[in-house]
Amino acid sequence: MDAAATTTTGFELSAALDARLLQTAEQMRGAASVVALTGAGLSVESGIPPFRGPGGLWTKYGEPPLDGYQRFLRDPVEAWRQRLHPTEGWAMGLQETLREAKPNDGHFALAALEASGCCDALITQNVDDLHRQAGQRALLEIHGNHFWLRCIECHRRFDPQHFEVDEARLPPHCPACGGIVKGDTVSFGEPIPPDVLRACYAAVARCDLMLVIGTSATVFPAADFPMEVLRKGGAVIEINPHESELSSVATSSLRGPAAAVLVRLLHHLRAHGQAGATA
Image (cartoon, rainbow, N blue to C red):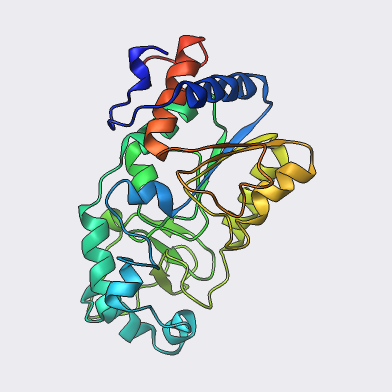
């Protein structure tokens, strides 16, 4: 095992893990379509706590209302006031945390895999915008994006930097269809936007190798994506420092921090000419 096995994160991969990563790189080279699925474990490595559990955002600041979407529909003006000037602990805590977070080496490695043609799509359950900031393009944010906006009628999305919100005329409306615009994050009680869901299922239908990174894969519908790949006879490679409910059925489970494992996987693909060195 060469010196590159000690990653930029300081985590030293064992020889056994490195051999399995080399095998994973070979599997990826032979796959027709590779899709990645990421969860909160990848964001934790950027300093974003999980929502639940010790130190979790909801544990610390309180959980958002379980009828969040219904509240929005009842009073979108007040919902927008809360978005612009949050007063509830969980909303303030989330905004402050996500504003300070930066992509880690795992985000950049995944963007490099995509840029080099080694990953066709990335489905994320995270709302933190870090994949987008790292340069990911074929990105499906199944739970939305905390910073972006979305029309609840036509599902058109807006970069807030190019969408003016007039506080004197709330809620804002979609310039395309006139529908009400809300934050893109999928609230409790809100259906996942159908355009994103269709794109996810289409990516999964083409996929014969899925990388499942930093997620226990227990929240539906995302939890069914790796199972669908397995049902079709494809491979599911779990990357997680901890055992999860997926571990017992995954084709292979790679134990280690996501950033360190992904950086080393990228190294193996580059060493064999599959991932461009410019990524």
